[in-house]
Length: 515
Image 1: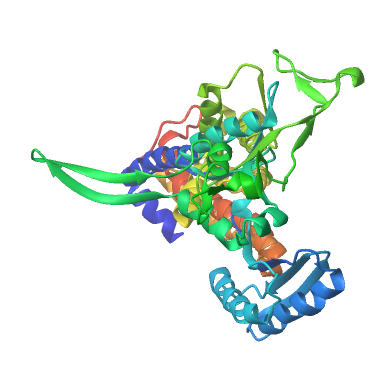
Image 2 (image 1 turned 180 degrees about the vertical axis):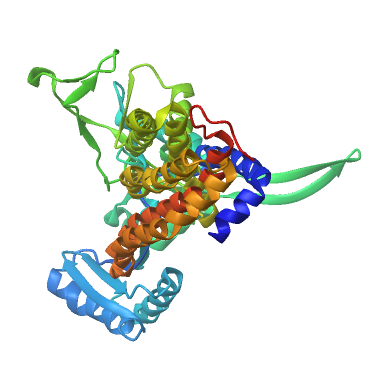
């Protein structure tokens, strides 16, 4: 074959190229981002609208149908469905796969803006979100403590700031806990008695809780910024003592005279509870917690999301390191759940073990037929094919996710087929008395076409999976792509690298090399 003839002709360059390929492939494997799932854009937009106190039928007729009518004018919609429940409208818009998610998001946003004037005044501003696999959390950090839930949330917020300071962390969403708020409950009869309007009470509080810049002044060649600090330090006491009005006889009317000020908590919008069924001992063994010791605890949860394209293993390590270094108050218990990096690490370890064990088994089996030297020559086809695959992956911008890792494990058994045929045939020609390089050239040329045909038939069996339509097709397309790239790499190694490597190292017992 011409490609084999060229590789043999420039065998020194191919030998150097092989070393570069091995080093580059190893570096690619170590640096390529690893994550739990492929990054797939779902052309699916969700519009959520809140209509407090409205019945499902009212929500459907006054909110869902109005929004649907505006959205239906957008091109490229595959399916649209809505759910109307008490006080909540959810409209899900699915677009055809050829529609870009960003464009779909912008179009739906514009449609919702057009629909807003026709919605009831009590409806909160609709939220438009896109479905994205990158926004799924990679782990959940649960905090429990022997102190109050309000204090626990403060600890969670401090930890949230530290986690979001990690460059590879997109955000850490805090769930659960209590949020402080000042409730000013107006006494309508007192307002009427003092002749104070409700708006006057609101404006008094709003105007006082502000910081006002006062410009700058020059004193002895120094410039000082002036600011009037009016924000509340102790909200409840300070609000109570605000003057709402001064009567004609000079008497001050305070907020406490016309309202009841309470420094309490907001109505909870989210709850987070944890029930521990299993624990990991110091030795790493997982054991069940006895029924008597099981309890459900209120916790603060932090859903950690990584940035698209970043390495989930490195991100997970940085997050855990931040947790270890964080100064938690005494009595705080930290438990990490849903850690996807563990599954990814397990798959990576399985892949490494399969490559090593496959290499060993191939060499052991071929020892009985080709001897140690030639069996080793066949065995190196596995890592070389893998290194080539990793280089291609990094060039295409792929990440090592569970589908690609699973596909690589499947492909391991096919990697040595081409190498076995080529090297065994070269060895046969060498036994017949041909020189090393002539045997490499003739041996590869004789089986080159069958090897290409065999690889093509295997590839053609997986190629139709690339035509799988819809989101599932986009998700599963990584499996045939990985197998096709891996088998193509194996074919490249068999026709270009193996003849040169075999030419350098093949030996026939009792026969001197003839040049």
